[in-house]
Image 1: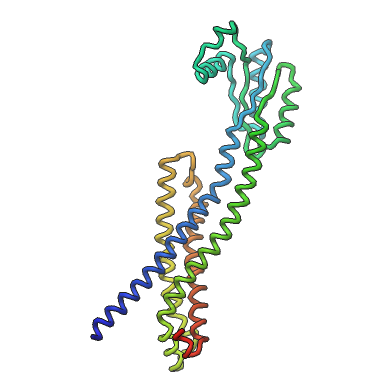
Image 2: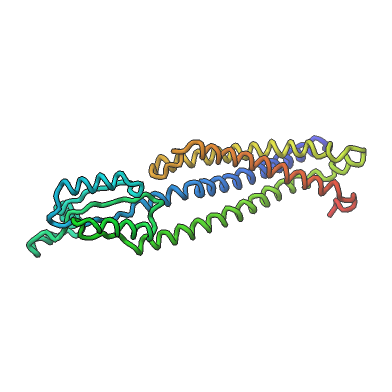
Length: 292
């Protein structure tokens, strides 16, 4: 009878520890994924902003030396990331590929102009900066027109601010939820030991002495759950980088390592704090209250 009871207690204990480790792993993994999103949000924003092109249309009488001089001066500017010369013939070919028609046969001439596509560094992709750039370029005699999608730039900047705000809010809320979920799992594990805690207290053990084994056990479970979560985050990062190379999650190993270390530390800190207050609660309860 006693052996079967011991087996039953051992199974309950293993089940309790498993649920604690599982909840810590899942919550910290999701928190780590959110951290990856926050960490790479700036990179994603930079990538999309730098895809916006400013087209500088050149007049018919422009000389090659003037085109080369303009491109060199643009490349030397901190404002510009990259430039690309597009001849009128190339522009016509691109239009043909997009429309699938020999439109020049209908109109009898090539309506396009030689142009330079300018890709701007992400920090300068604002309406004010682009307008200043446009004004300065239009001062050159051989420049006919400077074009860019104002609505797209305005919409992108507005959405970037909105997404950044909600990512911050979601990070704070999710961190709080993570702490509450881990805390609940640990409190349930400690709850199953409430009579042992009170018995130890009644025979004269100090609160610190009683708390110590519970805290160390929870920290070990926290480390185990954190390590599994970190392994999951690393596997996910490798999967994303292999399938979407543009994401470049592992391009900055220091930031990624700091994220994994942060997840590990968070698992230890949350389990330590949760166990401390959970054991403290049962230490302060009267014996009669343990049954409720």
